[in-house]
Length: 503
Image 1 (cartoon, rainbow, N blue to C red):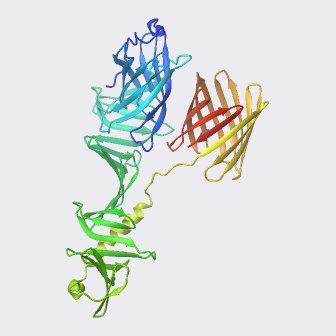
Image 2 (tube, helix red, strand yellow):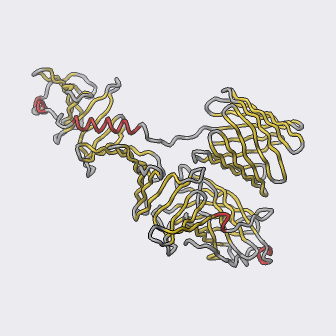
Image 3 (tube, one colour):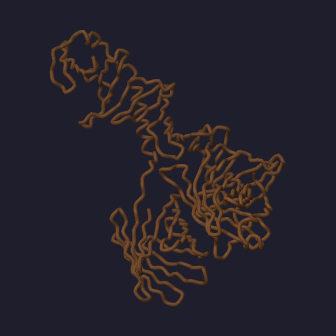
C-alpha cells in the first residue's frame, strides 16, 4: 500500500489530449458523506504527467493523498475506476468519464489500521492550465535508526505521520503534528481500535473502539468515562467507578437511569421535579417505587402501577394517604401497600457519588452544535467596492475596498468594535495580504489556478485555509478554521452584486 513511486500508463481512452501524452489535471470539491448529517468537503486534484504518472492530492480537512492507477475502464459506457494508495487509506474512485468532467462516488478503506469504511461523491473538471504533481508534493518521508539498530521509516500525509518498520509495514503508530510541525497527539492502533495519547505528557486522551462496521469513542476524566459515537457526537451514556464496580448512567428525559456493569437496569433513577428539586427513585422487584431527596432521605412518597393505573401514597406516621395519577385522594387500598415500610434506600449514597462525578465530567463534554451563518453582499462602484456583512449572532460589519493598480486597500469596521485594515497586492496569479486588526496582525496569500483559488491566512486566532471554485455565476467555498472545523458556503453573482453565505 505504501509505495514510493508508481509509473502509470494512463487513459488511452480519455481524449486526444491523453493519446498525445500531454499532461492533464482535474480538480474540484469531493464530499465525504460517511456522516450524512454533517458531510465534509475538501479540494481534490487528480494529476497525470506526460510520462503517465498519476497522483491524487486530497486537501484539509480530509486525508488520502498518494499515487494512483487505473484499474478498470470501458470505452462504450465511459465508466472509469481509479484506485489511489496512500498512508491514510486506499480510495477507489468510480465514475463516468467525459470530455468535460469525471464524476461519481468514492469509497475509502483502511488496510493498515482499524477504521470504518467511508464513502463520498466527487465531480472533477479539467484545469485550464494543468497542475502536475509529484509524489513529494503530497507525501513526505524520512528514515532513522531505532535503538536496536533497525531502520524505521516515517511517511506523512500533511500533518499525519505514519511509522513503518524495516519491512515498510505499518508499525501501528501515527503522530499528529501541530502548526509548528511538532508532535502533539500519538495514536496507537490496535486490532479493534485506537488509543489517543498526548505526545508530551503521555496522558490518555481518547479511546476508539470499532468492529469494522460501527464504533464509538470514550473519553476518561478521573473515574468517569464519557462516551461518543463514531463521529465524536456526544451520546447519553457515561460510566463511573463506584467502590470498585462500574456503574453505567444514561440520560433519559428529565433524569438519569443507572445500570450495572452488565447493563442490567438497577431500577434506580436520578431526576428533577417540575419545581427544579432533584430526587432519587428506587423501584423494587414488585414494581413499588420509593422517592428520596438529593441527600438520600426518604420523602415518604411511594408509587406503583396497578391494572394500568399509577397510584401514589404519602406515608405520614402510621397513616397512608393514597392518590391517583392526578393526585386526587382516593380510598386506601391497603393490599397494594402491604410492603410500604420496608424502604429501598440501601446503597443510594454510593450511586450519588456516581451522579456527582458524572456531573463534574460532563462539564468537559464537547457537544456538536450548528455553527453560525455569515452572509454578505458586495456592490462595486468604479474602483471601489462596498460590502455589508451580517453574522447570525447579530454582529454587523462594513468593508470598503479601494483598488489602485495591482493593490487592494480594505478597511473593515464592526458593530462589536472590531477594526481591520489590510492590503492585497496582486502579482500574476498570486495575491499577498498583510495588515492589522483590533485583535492582532493579519497576513496570508492566495493563488489562482483556473477557476479555483486557494488561500491561507495567519491571524491572532491561528491559521485559516480556504479554497474556492467558480462554476458559472456561482462560487463554492470551503474554509478550514484554526480549530479544524470546516465551513462551507456559496457566492452568487447577480448583475454587479455578489451575495455570499458561509455556514
